[in-house]
Image 1 (tube, rainbow over the protein chains, first blue to last red):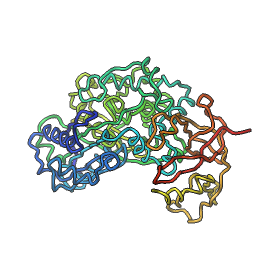
Image 2: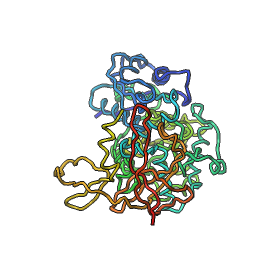
Image 3: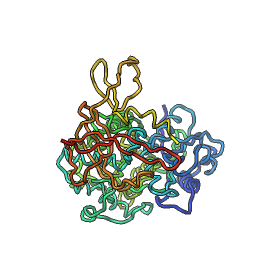
Image 4: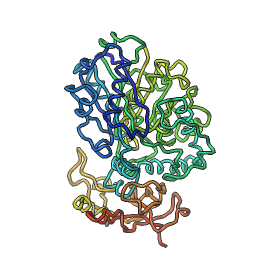
Amino acid sequence: MTNIYVIGSAATPVGEHYSRSLADLASEAVRGAFASAPGLTARSVGALYVANALGDNLAGQGQLGAFLASAVGLRGVPALRVEAAGASGGVAMQQAAQAIAAGQCEVAVVLGAEKVTDRLEGALEAALASQSDAEAEGINGLTLNAQWALLMRRYMHEYGYSADAFAPFPVNAHANALKNPQALYRFAINADKYRKAGQIASPLNMLDCSSVADGAACVILAAESVAQTIAGPRVRLAGTAVATDSPSLAARPDPLDLTAARASAHIALGRAHMGLGEVQVFELSDPHGIAAALALEAFGCYGRGEAPRHAAGGALAPTGRTPIATAGGYKARGDVAGASGVYQVVELVRQLRGTAGPSQVPGARIALAQSLGGIGATAATCVLVSE
Amino acid sequence: MEIARHWRQRGARYRLEGQRSRSTGAVRFPAQPPALGEELNEWELVTLSGRGEIYSFSVIRQAPDGYDAFTPYPVALVRLAEGPLVSAQLTDCAEGDLAIGQSVEMATRLLVDGGADDVLVYGYKFRPTIQ
């Protein structure tokens, strides 16, 4: 089986792009990714995987494979949309890698694109809520934020934390976003501001909830034979894995255990022949501190109930034990829904090429991205290695 | 208009109807189709007591379309006496009185008003247990 490499990657700024359409954003990301892969042309592309979670609900556009292939200059290429809620990007990465591994093509493009700001907040909350069990949970007005809030409250109860203990997660995210020109929120926050922020779904407050915004990110994957022809340092997609769990929190034996997050991470690391301890930088689904805490604990980076303590000690910073959100994470770079998993890879490629600027993790060689759909009902992991 | 979709839920929404395993006695809610490898009649319908305690709760201030009129509203994961967790809104309570472990019971309330062209959806919420 061929090795698979990331030969190009780029993203648009995350934002409220009222003057730009889904196609405009997608085009910019794809052009940027091709510009980073000198010599590569559209003719080389054998498949396009569009990662999108909310297109039919919020962008009013279906059949995004053909629609965006045509819009970005890949007309005629086999194309389809991958939908797995917030994990769409990670699942699309795996689909593209599998197409190359199966010999179906030598170059596959993954395009995460999301356009959400044409609709008001209530429509967004409803669309996100419909990604859990719509009949059993969505009908109760249970939002995605509130589901994480239920886990946070239980976590605080079981392990004896106050809500303030989660401040280090968004504080770290904002500190890194401040240095990322593509981030949605380029300002710093502190624990005091966190404490005073208004409630969204208690105990989650405004400074512990991501904002879903518009953006597109593109990653070009290629077989080794093609990657050898592209100049520059190489980043290998060493392993991918997808796992699932019940979309309904109530149906899980232990709601604080993100079993799919653990399975997906460990299977992907196994396929990459890597150990968890070797990972130097992480990109997680971190719309809230509790989400990152539960993921790090599910992987086994920290024991259960311990992640907030380590976060308070600086573990999340680029120089810490488990750096996360180096571009600002979901909280401050911006939550791009189904495109987030592709943004994650764009950031980790910067880290592995040593071009991440002030948020560079020193000497990063091995990185792990994981995107979650819903509360970890789908978990998709990519392990990346610089060569 | 989603009349049939809501009508299919009438057992769960109005009676808290779940299922009990004929072989292990385990109870689950809501009812599910039989899993691969299970006998078709493995799970029998059972009406749950509607009693339980709060496993966790949240008060929602940023609501989906259709729920604005209720905002802010409390939601919870409730551990039912028979074992399963269920997510639901809480009702007939003050935000400051809520606590994990508090005893609650089912009450039938309006869940959502679909508007002039749709239905009023009723179903279970949970309220502090009346002694």
